[in-house]
Image (cartoon, rainbow, N blue to C red; front, side):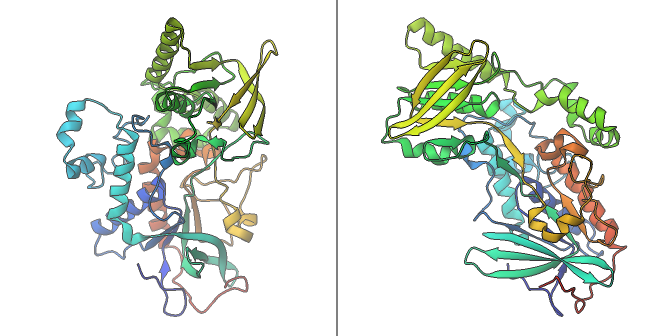
Length: 448
């Protein structure tokens, strides 16, 4: 799509999206549907910038038989607009698999299928996104004493840099892989998000042993995958618990993901917020589908019966030292209760140690210093997911993720995405009426 730079004749977008994962994709769909529903009203104008060359969502963990942990009804749109043509059911109909899926009697699609649904949806709004484009900075456009617009600097894959002006930002830069302190990724030490990108490189290695660190769903999936993929290799799973803990997806516990639970959480005292997160952490964190737990236990027991044990569980344990050697990785495992140590020489160590939200503030530059924080240093966020800033900044900065401390456990999950983007869009539309029209000639000293 050809875009104009800001200037006397350039556009001012109502919204610029930083990143184009599932959350900002859902936002692009919401505003597309909004504009189609009210054709006589001034459309909401938007554009999104994504540094990946094409749409992609955790591609390194698209294991062939891995399923979603969330119902297909919590897709990009259904909780907001059940009649949407962007729904997962519409996707199935377009792909000719609707009847087959119904006969399958399953609420939880394959992860590779849901990713294909995301790609199908992204292709329908590809006029709103520029891939291979990284947002490298945001500066305020100062008019008098106020900031009503932002200039967003974007660098393309060929190194060109251009500014785009917007009334609002939607930052959806996703999650970042998390590794224990001191651990550095290498050809032999991986984070699980790169599993499928790395594993084909082992075709000629004939690995003899893998070590998998972690106790959550990803750790269990990686363990099962490597055990299947390399039938002559030993797979050692290391975690601090006695065993994998099942995820709580019971009907009452799932209420933590309800849209109204966000309202309850947002208005709760801080102490109650912490209790709720603690009570229901096992709905999402360090928890594994019970079917996968049972399958791994069956494998381990079967191997004990046959005497050919390839699947080993080092429970109540931790990796004390991980050192690369010319032949691989030497891992020292310490049992937490006894202090006993076991040394394992492995070909690869995979850390399935989770993710952390990407910090939204570095890209904001000086604007980050004008964002309000609480006593723990966390940014303050309004109920409509807008960063709380000083009163002089009237343009909006919305967060798609990184709001667990204010909005609850659904902050970075698909469960509430469709509803969240509807609330963000409603806020953008409502606030647009209160903001002044663009004054293209008035640019502050900090603007490019």
